Length: 509
Image (cartoon, rainbow, N blue to C red; front, top):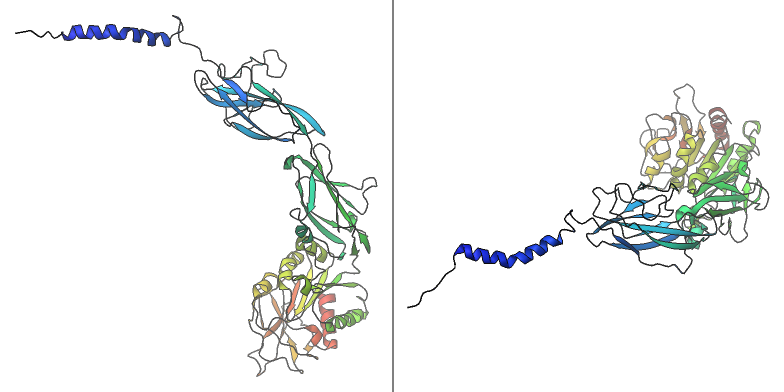
């Protein structure tokens, strides 16, 4: 019978220790460089995706880079374009817009990897610079100098790349883009008063920030002082007679962009194709806005104004036809500038007062866009118009006129020929003269005045309508009168007295 021998636990442990001892000694040796302590951090190495630029580039440059670390990993990069100002980023690529000082130039890009050996890292992707120990006091980083707080964690020999660039001149277009359709949307009418607004957009392939300014000229581009500068963010300008618009004459506007290197864009002009526009100087302080398709009203107003109050306004008023060509344009009339605000508003401000007369389809949207700003600046308005038989745009009226609302439907019957519009006593005393119905068919919408407005006229009691509908109101500050009757369909004698009260007494013409 044999005997089986089993080693004791202590002898087994001893054998295992002898077997593992070489491995333990090897591991211990790997974590030591010498009896004096651990290995120092080894700096990273930086690489650019390309080491040579063979083609001349624009001032917008896209670069890529990466880093290797033999004993850790890369946490970010320091980059510079002048070796004096260094910035920290965690990105591996970026697009730079280089500041042009001439038609072309040569820039040197430097990039240094930063590894995980640093205790604290700078704020990334900001305008904060990272200081360095300028050992030779030359104001620039030289290989081997230390970045403050990143000692030992930064590539001591940053990678560099020379980048040759060539400036591209800017371009500028009227409108919102380079298309002809956009240009047509801001094209001036062939005739304006002595106000003109222009809108444009500029572009530079080198970057939007490289446009240094815009320059404009009127009628002359070669005389000394012909070009006038505008800040680079400007996209519109409104010009008046004092800016050089030639009154009662032909005009042309020129525009160009200038970049930081001094390169000019191609000069563009408005009107295009060697065109010009005619600018009328106002003849007086009164403007008639003709919002009327037919011709019967124009002669009525001309006859009244030429004789009003002894002829004081004869030859001293102008007409602005906002309906001419409206059918062909599909919008406002051909004489209405496309840039309503500010050009039409500034046109109205050339005059102290406006008579706006309309038919049953008045241009209420245009009135809402322009008249509030005009009256706030002191302008005065008399609007006399019919309205659509069923009104679906009264919100426009409440935007500019002294009414809370207007009756949706017109009165069912036209005003009888013998109708007298009865004046209502005014808060300050007195009243307007009576108005008598003349020739022509006229339907009216009752008005519901705003709380601060004064009622000027009511219709008389009649079996054809209920009560005494209000047909004319005046705003509390006496700058706006709205009549839902057409004055040219009343008798000329009564309207003459009415206009004298409005224009001479109320508006001060």
